[in-house]
Image (cartoon, rainbow, N blue to C red; front, top):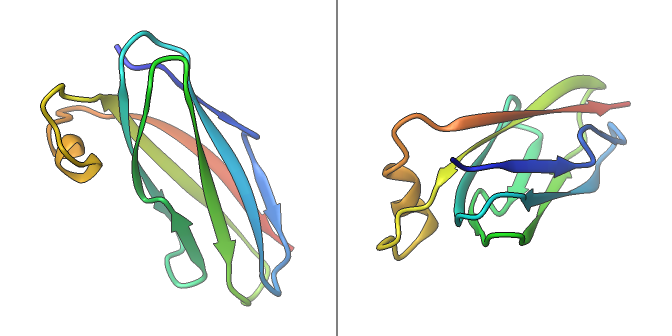
Length: 109
């Protein structure tokens, strides 16, 4: 079973725009595939949206906030065990039947 942690577990960015970086850490023994979603696609850009995290590995997620009104939003990181034969993270994620989820609150002030 996939095990993923995010650090920091919450974020804050200026409402006028800015960036925050979060690190996904795979604490399990299997390769993990992930997909990052935002509750506000108008003002947030995520890089990468899909990716792999090797066992005992880490992957950075960069969150960019465009200028907009102050608001509380969230990121949802869906993840699961990566199929061994997947060529890309997008293809691998399609094979995850019931993804686990992590929620990261993001506050724009």
